[in-house]
Length: 393
Image (cartoon, rainbow, N blue to C red; front, side, top):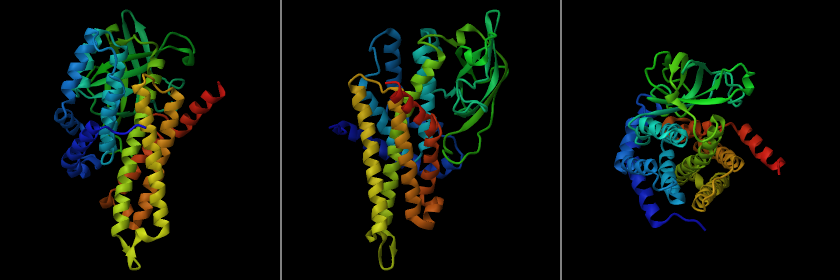
């Protein structure tokens, strides 16, 4: 049976102390969008030496040493900060994960050594902010088939056109991993998916201001507009399979990581709810003594245990050298997202009128948790991936 080791618990407690000291006091500013999360993320990375570890790991990978990611131990060390941060600010984790996991991860997997040197290290250390641009206004869940952004070959260059929406870090990104279709005369759905790396300030590239949204206010989201952006072949990521396949690999990582995010939200809601049930008095006794309140708390604990087991299973798989299939990652995300939404909703209900007030925090967690059912593929898309896998056996 998997359990956190003594070393991992020490790291968890250290991260928890940092979150209490650095993030909680700034939560109102983060949730209102008055401050972006990036300086806090850099503070986190410096405090725990994550930037220096990234530099050392980068040099080893570039020189061909070290081989892989380090297995389950590295995964568990990566998931612990996610869980603790999500107890307070899930949006910070989204902003950090897209930059480190998706933008940097794609470049490190598919880039040449020169491209990794040029863009990878600055993203891995968070010296620069990354965005990962797939979603378009007209595509949504049909991310590849409905993609309209194009790359047209003109001599030795490519000319990029199109627009992207719901792009995490889009307003502030220094480096953008941009997916589009090769305009080669074939029907749009048959065209090859290409992946380019763009830099802020390139002629023809416009990054919008942050969009207003229901939750995850500490994760800036924006739009990108490309009008005849000219790029050389040095910006094309061509290694590690097709652009579509690399995106699918990222979906697995992103969906598995969301279970850890959900676990943090559920643990925090349960903690807040238990404390409130002990101290809120109605009809002469704490509401925790009423059976309906006990039922809500019991269901929250069941959800916590189930999602924690999904996270532990993922760590064990990584330690065994196995990566979840897309269907397995989809199942993790589907259950964890639904559990987080149910738990946060019950927490708001348990708090009654206070639950609807931002002062008591469960309303923020409820708004943030709803995004788990939408981004990285909606619940409906997860169901499709799971069912297709079952029916193909």
